[in-house]
Image (cartoon, rainbow, N blue to C red; front, side, top):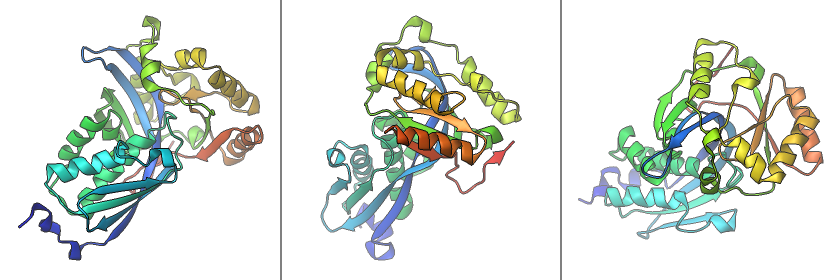
Amino acid sequence: MRRDDHACPEAIEKVRFVRSYAKINLTLDVLGKRPDGYHELATIMQTIDLYDTLCFSIIDENRVSMVCNRPELSNEQNLVVRAAQVIRQKLNLTRGLAIELNKRIPVAAGLGGGSSNAAATLLALQQWWQLPLSLHDLWEIATSLGSDIPFFLTGGLALCEGRGEKITPLAPHWPTSMRWLVLLKPAIGVSTATVFRQLTASDYSNGSWSRAAEAALQTRSTLRPTDLYNSLERGVLAQYPEVAQARADMLQAGASYVRLSGSGPTLFSTFADLPAAAWVQHQLQHQGYEAYLTRPITTANTEISYF
């Protein structure tokens, strides 16, 4: 019996759709450079209701193919294809797979779109094909593919440490003053590797920003905009005038504060009520910016507890 016969093709659906959610970094502390060349991080991540859609179809051929509405992403180096291939090779599967990716999350934006796509692929194949893979098995595969991917296996609210692969899920507590999020994606791409290479010693922190934010969220204490911090923000604003200008325009449009998500260039601000958030989004779109109105979510069918 072939390894992939434990869930015979006749017993499973031929097509499956899944959503793949983006994230923001509420905080991002860079503690220093590691011996392996990566940087030690402490960051609080939260999934948001901005998502890509993946469609998986079983095919008779022993291969994985992928097409995307962004043609430049339709290639074998896409993390979606790589994630599927790792699982097939690990379990010696011969069942073929065609993947369609409808991309809505901005690319190279600091929102984790590619990592989320990969995690969604791992979870979809495990559940759909009834594969003998534990969450730890998936975590090991995810870690081998990219630093942000393990977070997306569970999503929600979490403290991520190490390279980002050490995940501590947090209770889904979220301030009422931050119910709505407006994201602005400047019309440029930012290289994560370049941003990290250009960090200076003064950009490093001791992790206290993320720890303080974690404590505030878990004890339902006051979390002020000034409590949010991103070690990469200073360098990105200095190196990319377009991001600095977008930040100024966001403040001018009515945002009370603006923070960078991940390595950028996406900026975000939070709002207590929908009219204020919608007004800022409208103002930014009127100026020609790519702006999104979204909210924090969990990905485990549980409700966020607002305080």
